[in-house]
Image 1 (cartoon, one colour):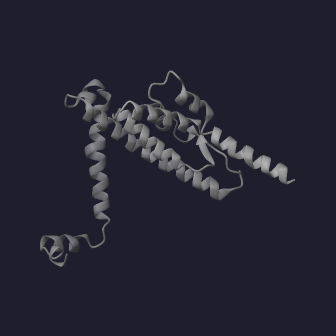
Image 2: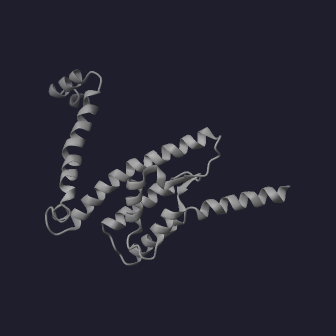
Image 3: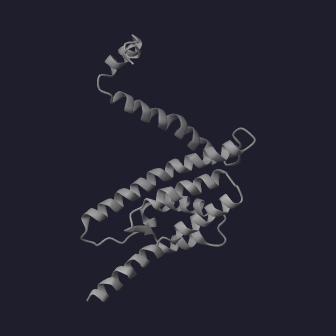
Length: 190
């Protein structure tokens, strides 16, 4: 009986490790970047995605067909393939290994997926920023990909300003706090 239990546990652990071979592909790319002293937008994306997915629960992974696409020998930037799939496939990208009746694990997996999706949007914006920063001309990326101009403007000005405005107005006693700043009552106590 113990032998059967140990065999089951070992095969389960191996199955989980095999279901995450895309992380190994990202790690190999990171080693390539390090070995060749490459620091660019794709290297940063790669490192950020490794950091994100290393924290993913063991009961969650990327579906095998997407891992094959990420790790394909024809893929120059596996991290970009992963980011693309996160954004386009959303929660359909993931496979859960939790028991159907395990509500807690299912809930944790759902939270992890939502966290990854939120990070992916920020990673996309960071990628655009990093690509632009490493280019020699102002607005080079936006000029090369004109479809990004409106998106970039909205995420930089409209979305952030409205989000920040909402957060500021949710502060309790905002007027009193602003008056304290206006009257320099806070800095004298610091």
